[in-house]
Image (cartoon, rainbow, N blue to C red):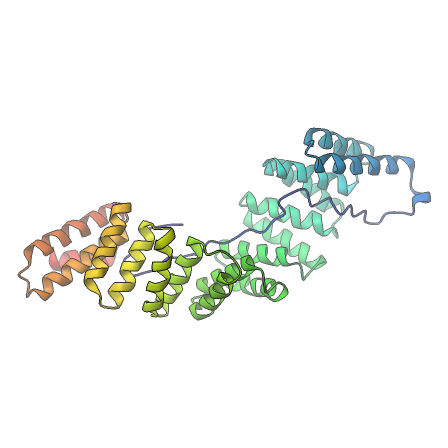
Length: 338
């Protein structure tokens, strides 16, 4: 998650989640589309299907080399056997070779355009390979076959969000939640879409629903705190960050807590939180900005007699600009006080 943010502005994009099959699920169902009656099929087709079925059985035992050989044998016998290409793709995906998996799923999708598994799994591999535009098109093809599939809707929303097209993502993220309201992953992704659209009240509601369905994670708590801050619900933001810091303290969490405390005019506590942030990451420039602003306030409230606070404020704000140059607000403060 990008930590490069100016003081007072909470976290940006939420973590988005990619939903995909973890194992060899693409060919498990053995969908033999357009399969002729047994008595009408050529012997070679039966031999190819038998090899593919044997490959699936071997894959389930973890003998991927032997399984791959059987799927390749099936393809050699019948080069149009979609399920064999899906089997090859599943093995490559399981082994982390997404380029090879993508080629196999692409072949399956071309051979059988109405095969959901082929289209969806092609989308998943394109997504992992960060070929987002192509992934979107593959997911859309999958959804023409099964419009209510939760994973395809969820992943399509994620891809659109990663393309900075939150408006396009919204209907698919909503549909995933409507179809599977008890799925935390769908709730978190819908919240991320709402955050990108600056619809923070709805984002908070989704994060709260997700929190009831899953173990609390640092990402969920940080992003919920961000949306609470956008809504100026600073006390709730503080409570959320206190909960996070109990289990997963980080420079970002402490800095966000400092921001929440500052907005509640609890300036000494805010300064302490910003300093805790810098203890964890001395280069976290939003925390440097927080320290600088707190010290400038201290200088102003002293009728401009607290020169030590002024010198320290200028020092940390200059350090912040060295780390991240594009901060007009900090430049303005240094011009005024430096």
